[in-house]
Image (cartoon, rainbow, N blue to C red; front, side, top):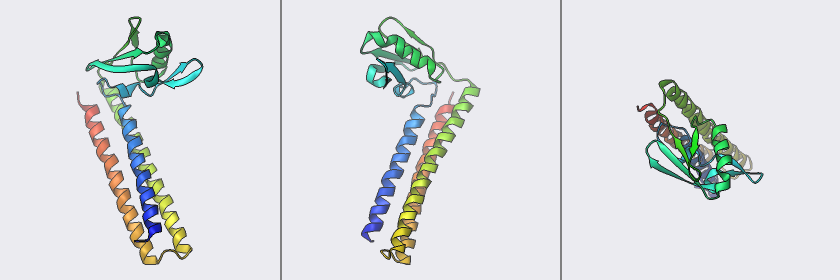
Length: 188
């Protein structure tokens, strides 16, 4: 296959993989009733006037299935970390013993589970839209190559089919991740 087609498809595949990774990261941040550091590690904490991700300010561990322990590297940040956790929309109230913040992850109610499933569906749809946007841009690029005479009609058709196959594969991957996340959320 022509080099320009390979470059275009390769770039599109990398972008699609990244869209899947971002969706997976989004899913990790959706609370399932189990404690996981992903719930809070991306929270932004105001630290000396700058917003800093919590994972840079504290060690986050899971001492028990429903408990997160946040041990700040600097004890002076405890109040700021608690404030950030309360301001986030994760529905967990922090408590501290002076050196470690404990987060008890409550079991999800049926209503909250359904809300989380809706959230997962919308994040999956964002991932699918991302993948389709990559496909559209790659297709436009291929069309431009055809207009410039670098690509024949047959080469364009083959490249578009390969691009569609890539798109289908990555959309399917997001759908499978969504199914797993949904099962995890609905598990009591």
